Image (cartoon, rainbow, N blue to C red; front, side, top):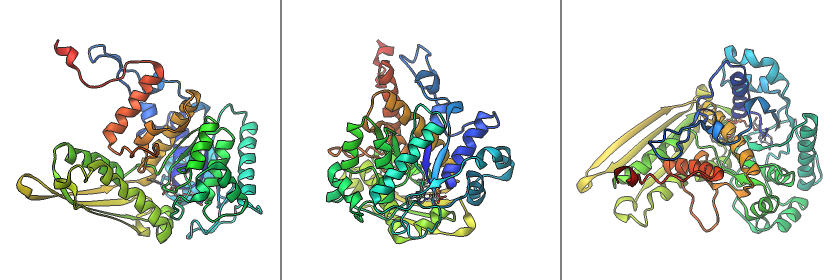
Length: 422
Ligand SMILES: NC(=O)c1ccc[n+]([C@@H]2O[C@H](COP(=O)([O-])OP(=O)(O)OC[C@H]3O[C@@H](n4cnc5c(N)ncnc54)[C@H](O)[C@@H]3O)[C@@H](O)[C@H]2O)c1
């Protein structure tokens, strides 16, 4: 289990898995570990745990590695991140200390507010990507592993738009060799992972693997890919509430979302380039869920604003505050306020675990390219070019579970239920 980036999310994930393995904790927030799946009719009473229904890798079999621009081991990084308290970290100190970051493929052009020393050297971006491939092979050999999976847990890079060099693999590889500015470090990890047959999931909103060149490459190598941006706090709430308004045909005038957070992620997002990437990712959901072109009376004039402010006193404990202006019968206005005092990495860690296990499963099930059924986990889900992304959390959840049923050959569940009344 490889993570580019060994910061707050990644170390909280590693520490948590180890605590669960030792029986010290319960994997709260993880669908793969705690979730169940209904099979057949409601009267049959068949509701196995997901981990008993599909052949997921066992937690005991996971081995962790990663890359970071800082040389801190996972224990030091976790202490600095300040997410977990020493009563938890002390129990897994030795384990975390043994996880040391490999040198990162990094370029400050793409993450302005970071400076680190644990960085690879190479003449071209292609050379750096080849070095990542070598790291992957070494890690696999050293730890005697059968399979690998990679989840991007590194910082949000500056906003990039798809360009000509992203359109096909040949142009992409030429651009890596020519140090083209449209090739960000995250793309090098993705290319290296796909080259080594390793599934790649993107937990940040960077473009990364969401380009035709890497999509085509993933398909040709039979590798599952997906992204972008873990759906953890505010967007999770948005994709729960917006479908409710739409289901009841309630109108929306505006949605103002503000965030204050004080971790390193917040510091990185303080740079306008990285913020723009995050903003785009957070803005998309409402438009797709509410479909203003189909429901102009209800959603034509939505004022949707997203703000993120770096505010150090809060550390990793973000406050996501939403003011929602809705309207009802005869256009009478109403307001909803949501104040989510959340813990970013506590919400993200189980998502990293689930993504790793499901992407590994997908690979073994012969699934390749974009894994749209895992949209459930992403703020900005990748999907086929001709489609629009599905953001509604409940549709995403149904799609995920139906995909698992389909993999095993169980009947899909439509929720029709007419047979109970025949
Ligand atoms: N926590 C959440 O709720 C949440 C939700 C959605 C997305 N994310 C995204 O997940 C990512 C990780 O979040 P975090 O809170 O752990 O951030 P963090 O700043 O604590 O950790 C990111 C780490 O990545 C490293 N890094 C940056 N560029 C790198 C590179 N090219 N190669 C290797 N390492 C590199 C940094 O040095 C840092 O240690 C961010 O992009 C964030 O936007 C987090």
